[in-house]
Image 1 (tube, rainbow, N blue to C red):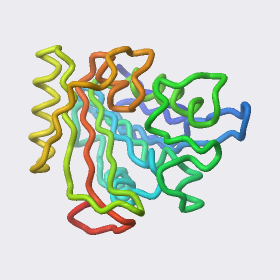
Image 2 (cartoon, helix red, strand yellow; image 1 turned 180 degrees about the horizontal axis):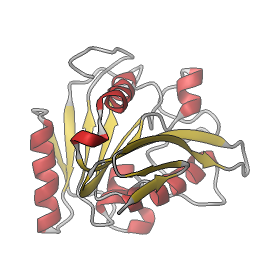
Image 3 (cartoon, one colour; image 1 turned 60 degrees about the vertical axis):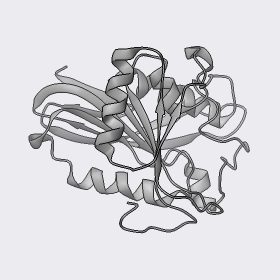
Image 4 (cartoon, rainbow, N blue to C red; image 1 turned 90 degrees about the vertical axis):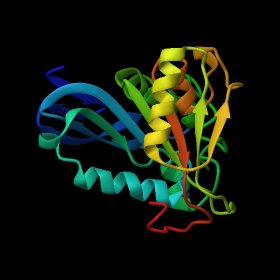
Length: 222
């Protein structure tokens, strides 16, 4: 495509654009989610990389912030959608696991709904703006403030052999040495629940990776 627009971030080929996904007010407050589009000079697939669904999983958030700095559209084929921090209120208030605005995890209410609480409205817009515009998705996480874990990743087996093989190749390329094989996640695109599963149920090869723990920002995790 000659141009790629996600939220207010719009880039033509060879450009990097910064903008927001604006979540309107509803039964509770509005919020804005930062987004960056890196639209490569050469054609190719669109990769979405999202972090900060839990706003105190710092290593993953910092990883995407660094990618924003180093990705050069002149050097890549295809495009990258980067969302470094979905759960802004969690980050600002240092509240683990949930969005303090409505008390809900921002990785449990996909694909979202327009008349829901802030978490559900944000999930709907991420589904529309990010998931539906990408070809592949990586959802980055890490141990939260009260969690001590070793790095691992998830491979969601959908039953679509071609899609599952690409997802497996993504996991192996990512390089974490422990992989959880999950064949029991929801199959219904209208009740996908998790961000990565929202992409998977829409035919898009996708993975989830976890690195980091207990509020730390170890360079190896980042």
